[in-house]
Image (tube, rainbow, N blue to C red; front, side):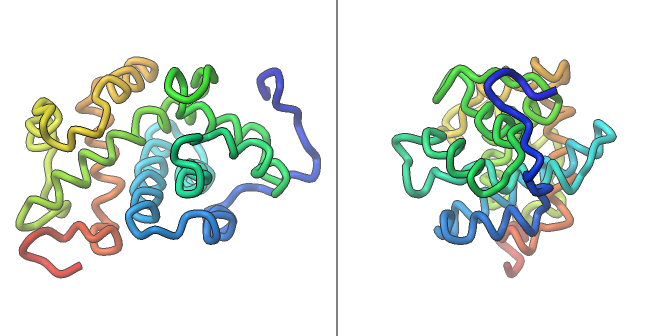
Length: 203
């Protein structure tokens, strides 16, 4: 069911990771934003696995979530709905993307497991990335215990909003440690692509 205001469209194309990358290629061009898109996409793929959902679909939504940020950093998500709908993205997927700005950029509350997951992992992956970059072996041997030490240190990766992460985990009915473990395990196989092989490895 698509919430009110987001009408089903028969001509919508199924959102795949390939399609998401094609859409993003002219809108997300800065390396750090591309890396963030990848981090979130792999975390979302892992969360889909946890919920027994479509991994490729969640992965695609994760990759596309910051579609307008590079061009409109001060008006994030205000240039997303119209543009993505015009490109044939399913209204339910557009809503999911918009919902990661809940209580920050808009009032679109995350309702589905996919929406709640995106809301939680967006900021969470930033702390995982920062923690991995400081380790000799990067993400390859990062464990939840080490992650939690960094999470509790609010000076570390200070721009990553812990309250949003915890709110997202609460929405999911999951502990932060569980969500972090799922995301770390989802991102770990892609450590080289993500530049997270560590201070002693080559990326």
